[in-house]
Image (cartoon, rainbow, N blue to C red; front, side):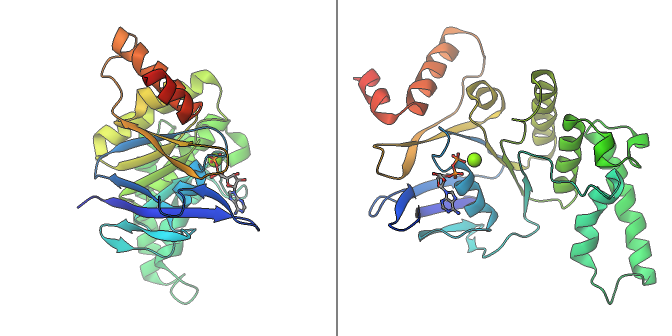
Length: 271
Ligand SMILES: Nc1ncnc2c1ncn2[C@@H]1O[C@H](COP(=O)(O)OP(=O)(O)O)[C@@H](O)[C@H]1O
Ligand SMILES: [Mg+2]
């Protein structure tokens, strides 16, 4: 059974309804397996973020279903971690408190907070958080800093640690590196690829950068519209070439580029 099964989904917004994903009688189907690193590519507005929100469970499709391990989830929960494009840190909390916030808030309520059990657990979670701080490439001395004392890249590292400490089976990242300068972005790509290789976590990573997708993904999925009035479909679902830079890789990039810029162009190229 796939870890994530996207079954015949359509999404449409507005009045009159404008299809964004899929179309009546032609919903989107996609199976994502444990350990996949999926990069979701496509032009701005093609529905990448919408697709991510469907898997997160913060939004429901108009028709069709999204199953995680065979079960439909109505809202976000600990099985899925989410990292948005722009750092989502609490500005008035330290790095350590930002990372420990999720576990403590999900495990304790107003009645159980400040009990001996809470302090015991808080010690454990803080220790775990220090482990993640090292793992994401921050120094222990950064634990006490506030977000505005960190660079954009460091803030994104903290956002990743915030997601990872919940030990999600699925990590959802929406253009999470787009706001970073090229050098930092490269470092973050290497970090997330290493984390993926070390943990076997399943990643669904939205980007509109083809190089980023080819470097990170075990599967590149392109969303594109057949015509301007219809919702997007899966236009391409392929493994990137093992080596970057050779002739196979160049063909792959040409194909990606053609698909991203519209399915009709791709069909013309294939003919
Ligand atoms: N909540 C919403 N209400 C109305 N329109 C929306 C909503 N969310 C997204 N859209 C529209 O749906 C389309 C796809 O959006 P989105 O998933 O954000 O695309 P992408 O992430 O690929 O750029 C866009 O045209 C956007 O304006
Ligand atoms: Mg988006």
